[in-house]
Length: 110
Image (tube, rainbow, N blue to C red; front, side):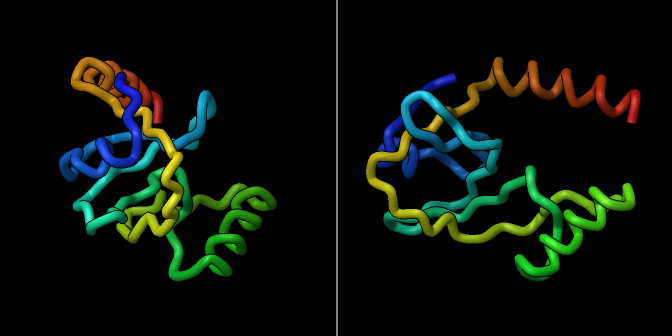
């Protein structure tokens, strides 16, 4: 893994898997798409797919209360958080291969 500042992160290609944070705490995984000047497009696979935040919260409540299942988010949108001090934990090839192995094992038991 590498830790990058915002300027260097914006230079990363689409498909980069990362976690944004502050020293030394990071959010969940995200997938970067193209950069848009000082912003970028991304997708958060650690969220429920929904048309809007109200539906997302309703779905999360239903999932907790009833055990219902909804798919993970698969839509991309602008990051929109212009925090100049943000840092980014960027997964490198070896990290991605290890993650891929864990996903393959999880698929076996899913």
